[in-house]
Length: 369
Image (cartoon, rainbow, N blue to C red):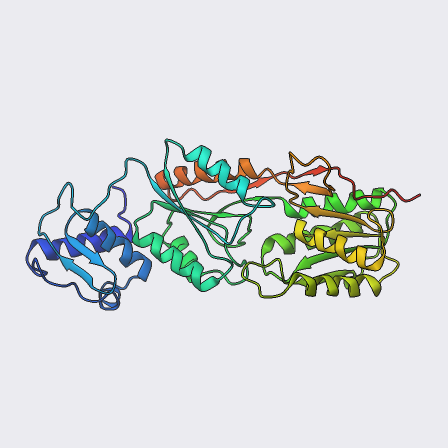
């Protein structure tokens, strides 16, 4: 016999109490804290049990009012319950734009058509807001979650709880090592190694890197790949060639773009021997180019620049294009939906999907003789 999940066990115990009159119709249920203590479960587990009771027509639930028993028998339909013919999936993104996220969402929406219903919210990189959104989705009784977490170092307690409960969950563009959580990402170590190697192959020796101070595995992996490329070309890696303090690109940041450009100017001025820079994000590459203008440097003649996640700019053929790493974002979005739907059926199926990056040649690399 298949083992009942913890939230299902709590649901059954509460339903039994309602059916035998221990919790009579019209009575308010004990507080969530009291119920968590009574059953020895987490907030997420309890909320799923209460949502199931609501779906079955036993209770009503209202914010700031609480849960009340409305029937001692399950109902096929209840006036407060909206049923769906397909799984309800929650998606939490830190943010998204044409550099990263828009195409991922496009892939999700195309793949979920006729197979699921997708709910989308943004956390803006705020860990507390991210936690709140996850709790809201759980209360809505979603069948699974797709997340682009705000951090890789500080994993949300809600995510840890979901992982221990084998709740269907997919993490995008992050590697949460050691955690039983399915993930979908590009091989960022290989990507950074490839794009840095391109600079070495074009005759550059003094190569810098500029990244944000965001604490996500994606950026750490890109730094790792940058360092590995130096080893592959038997070049001495210099720690002070990496600038990790860009803030304006971080969601919800209050730092002005001009402030970061000033810092980039100072970084380049202190290293006049540098002939190329790897920008960890497209918007950093834009700031880097503006810093070059302030210094009277030409791109790519005086400084070559490569980056990650360049927008396609299909209709602006006159625009300047950086040589860059392209991620298969559309495919990542489609895979997120298919993998999550599989996990809803088989909760124990944890998978790590890693896509290969490709280099797109642009106008920003100068070949040194």
